[in-house]
Image (tube, rainbow, N blue to C red; front, side):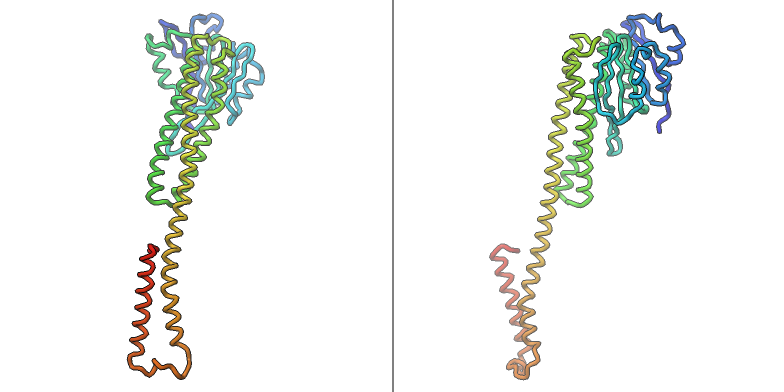
Length: 328
């Protein structure tokens, strides 16, 4: 398990930016916080959730919220309450040929955003660096724009994961066409499971963004909803690629089964040719192996060579016949 990070509190305006721990933030008088500040609290471990209860904003939240935040493997959703919106999304990364998905809870208050993940991650490192730049668009806008940037970063991560998966699928497809093996088939099945996992994680985000775009979340300006619409378009592109590669993976499985069938047919063809060649030879040898007294060829000194000659002629005839029929 990754080591627990302290809860980070970032506050900024157009001209000011600060990073402090949650302990320092709680020690200050929260009622005196400049209302022009955008406050972003980033929690990267569920073990630290209890400390959030001391926030003034959390006092206005429903008592069942903390229990919901602890639950994992939930479906992505958007819940709109009187004083805040509760968004549940998914963080996604790809490492060592494995898709890593963890739950991301976002609490959108009028005066702050709280993001809560299951374990430490690097998903928001770029956003945190951008916040240090006074000229960045994030610093010139409110927390609704920060929410857009977070969603935009999430969808970019989905795209990156999907790019790595599709690249691996393309490589496996080439390998499949060259040498179809059982290991290749297992890899294809893993890709199918992975794409289904991506689809199941990404699809519900569509509904969340669609509700934001239609202005259901208080505190998100109409001008910022346009940005969310752009993220929604990118999300649809991700879903289109997932659908496309799910079909490709299914066709790869068909190709594998067809390749195995063709190889089996080739093997059966060779065995059939060999067996049909030996059928007349077995008949000839069996004929002269019968225990009868009067065999005209037995007393003939060239009888043994004659039988061999007949068998050779029969084999040549069969091989030429198969060749003419293009059976070999």
